[in-house]
Length: 156
Image (cartoon, rainbow, N blue to C red; front, side, top):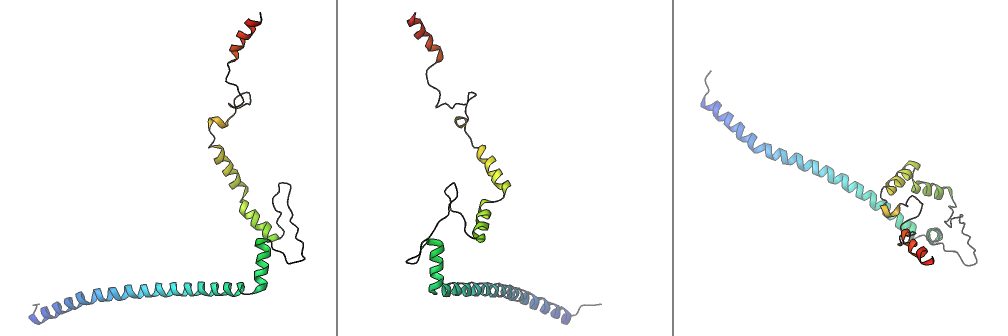
C-alpha cells in the first residue's frame, strides 16, 4: 500500500480544514451556551419586573396604603381609638397568629438560644466572676483587714 501524492494532499487538506473549523465550532457552542444563560437571566429579570410592577400597583391603592400605615406606623383614622397590648415586660403582644408565628421564628429554636447562652458565658472575663464570698472586686474595700489591729492597739 503506497501513499500517493493525491492521498497525502487530501489528508493535509482535511487536517487544515479541521484546524480551521474546530475553533469556530468551539466558539459557536460557547456563544450558544452564553445566549441560553442570558435568556434565562432575562426571563428571571422580567419576572422580577412584573413583581415590582404589582407592588407599585398595590401602593397606588389608597386602601392598601392606609392598611400598611395602620400596621407599620400605628396610624389611626380620625375618631378612632387604638389600644396597644403589652405583656408584663412591656413588650408589645402580637395581635394576630401571623405576628405570633413571626415572633416565634425570630426567637429561634430552644437549642439555638441555649447555644447562644453558652457562647456568651465563654466570653466572661475574670472580673465578671464573683469571688468565693459572692462579692465582686468592686464590693471589696482596698483596706487590708490586718490593718484593723492598729486601731485595736490604739484603744488599749
